[in-house]
Amino acid sequence: MPRGGADRVDGVSDEGVLQARVSAPAVGGAANAALVRLLAEELNVSRTSVRLVAGATGRQKLIVVDGLSPQGVADRWPGIKV
Image 1 (cartoon, rainbow, N blue to C red):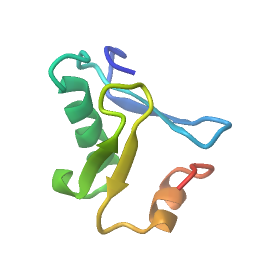
Image 2: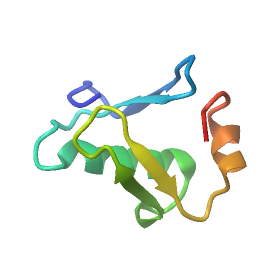
Image 3: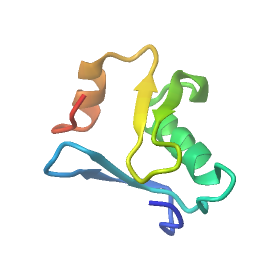
Image 4: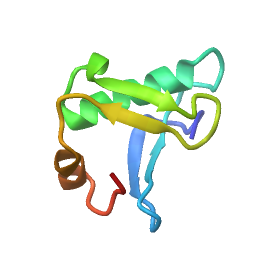
């Protein structure tokens, strides 16, 4: 959610989708860059390890995290669909 007031992860929806908000506007890729930074910090990996691979212009995104197993992501956010 761009212009969400703060950069934070709100949790996992009932559908297994991670819900996050960033304060950056959805202009010029600023919100996507803020999301990548947020997820890298939350997962304790480098920013270059987090890649947006689909959904750059939509509300739902597909993110790949290099160097972290799907179980590692699921351990951080129980209920997430990986």
